Image (cartoon, rainbow, N blue to C red; front, side, top):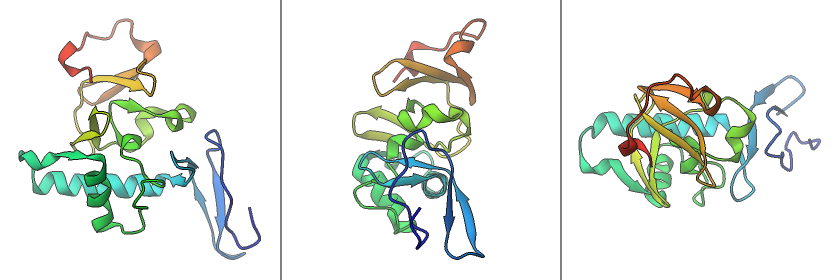
Length: 171
């Protein structure tokens, strides 16, 4: 950490950063590097989930819930303009129910905020927080990382004894 309270970066396995604005005012942030090297804090991801959840509640059931990568970033930036336009401090795939990026490997996947389903390389369905998702979670290589059944997350190691889920839910 620099003397001014800022920091250069943290590795994808660093989970806790203490940010000091002054000697009296410090805060804890869970963070890691984003896809473009920017620091992603849980706060940014939670902000993105809040914006998306509010949008889903407003436009529930409309076709407006399918968005491109750019449209997701722009939607979140309407409410939180400090989200970088290039997605370096909040990438849509970081808040997907069905996608586990490298940043998820350091903590429990179900504890991360979720608000999207990844439909293909650059298309997302906005579903909001607390969505009762049933389907597989794939990592960036396409391997099964875990799965959800009616909104409850199971790690890959828990596959035995868990009810089958529809092949239609694999994305």
